[in-house]
Length: 468
Image (cartoon, rainbow, N blue to C red; front, side, top):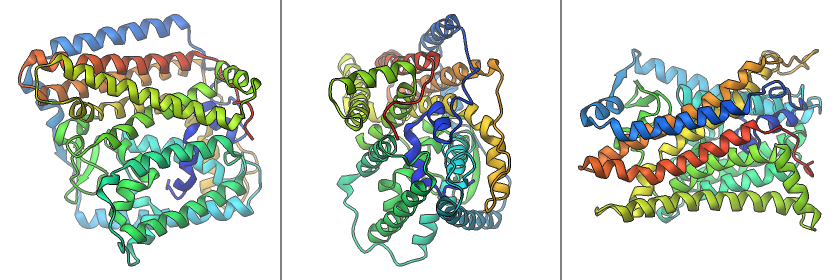
């Protein structure tokens, strides 16, 4: 599956499972039957908090902690085979991009059977993102815009280092705004137009400032997959594939970037990277809220007092992001003020931020796993025959017990984040007491994020009001 769609695949980031279903005309296909007793949420949430406290307090053997996140194995394989596979993915990305644009314009304007819509939501937003954090990030090879830009003269302008990745943060927020205020999720022609427009802008930008700078710092789609890929167990380093324990590349300077080099995770990060990591957590929380009955009622109440729906959705998204970012920054200040250390609040915020990617991955899996499974037959049908219309699109009805998996995914992401934070603390501080105490504010913030996620999963879903 390729990201040819990334263009607008990213526009679709604002919706959770229910919203994605709505976008392809499937209503609540993947969540109607997924009811879980509320006592189970309370019990598992309490168990997670207890496990977090135990982990932070009792796992104090530095050699053991270090051995966990430093473990790695080089996978068998030749560099020539990797280059051949990369070339094949380059071609596949270009083909899929062309198909998305072509079928979006010329295919049936019914989202349930249109290649562009099904591929963007089930193939890209759900499936490929899960591959990025569960296996490894294939986007650098699949990226069709990078494939084109690398083969043309580029780098005519110098990219200002002071900008960092803030353009990618702004791009993510802008794309979510576009998705929530237009019909791009259920209008194949509009989706194709958005992909085509994004393609032109992305290639032009990469040619202007250089391929590496553009896709590392500016393109929100590439940064999105690169960040999720940092939680994956497989990475590409020095032309070889290496296997790590899941999430352990997020710890300190033993983590690596987008799979194309040896970019360290937290030491090279700045507050722009912290903001992007927080945005990944918040955008899923936001999508989960606006696709619930309670979220819809809240939006209707604000619109009822005279506020435009677009302003309500945009304001809610930006205000929520600011709140999530502010709470995390506050945790860093509290941690720094409690410790007798030369490490300031900014450094602590940067060094603990990669743990948020584990939470984002767990929440994404909770949002999209059932959706991906339910739509997998339709996805296979459109990929097998992209130029024809599936005669009878099939959507699987999932058993109720799969609702418990959502809890497991959210809590699993939380526990992995706690371990990453724990390992990071032991790399930062020579004193065991300092290492333990430094984590508490961040652990409380992570538990708050997780509690909100579990609460949203327990609510009945509904289509967001006032959206096209």
